[in-house]
Length: 313
Image (cartoon, rainbow, N blue to C red; front, side):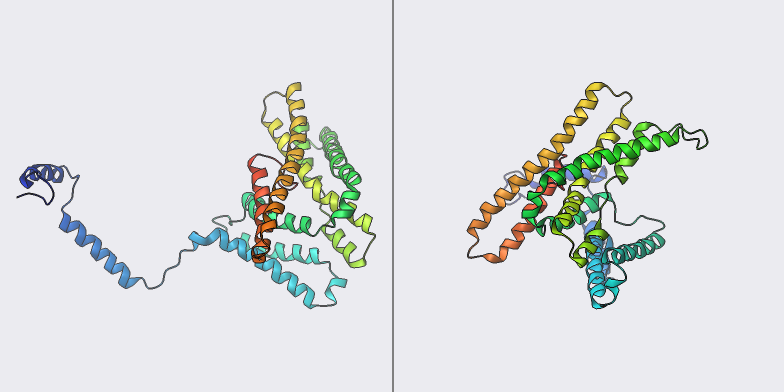
């Protein structure tokens, strides 16, 4: 007997199959098929409804966070007297504290899905895009010198002022903090130096403050985050080094300018591509908002991929 389309007699394959079966490399076909079919039938008959929350946990909870903030803003504006008592940003902070307490109480065994990577890669980009897209561009660029002075020089001054002050306090014998080094104090100061005046800006919008004052505070709050992120990464790398040489200090200063200027150039690149692409969307206007989100998000992710400033990009 021969196999169809094969010139080799079938009996030549029988010893090979028997040897494989004896060595437990090949199980009997009938038993394996019966067991699998019985298992599949039992699963099909017993499982009409299943729950796989782990499969969608990350995007599901991110969507819930955005939905919660949106519903909180809607509820805030439904009450006319509430804005005169509590600013909108304070209400959102209060809602966040409540939800954080609930999550902390329910997830005592496993931490929630919210971590730094998810925040910086999914939640921060739309916040920055909203701030940049609705920013009054003409007053911003007319006062760019003053804004950069506040955002760069002012933030650096704030970081070193706080760090050196804390280091001086640590040297007092009564506090017993002599083991805290200067680099650790600078690392901590880089975390708290950037002030985000969300409540101040919301009050400015409500009372219709002077446009120049508003754009100075707004522009400084938008750019100082990039400065503090660079300083934090720089001080953290210094803390991990056994010894810091003069060349490392100059390399860190050079990296500071590379991160900032690189983010600006990358943002201009994606903005140019977006402007060129939207020239061909006259007949398909529906995809133009999609390009706004995609190119902005790609500029942020590309900058983060090359360790540049995604916020500036």
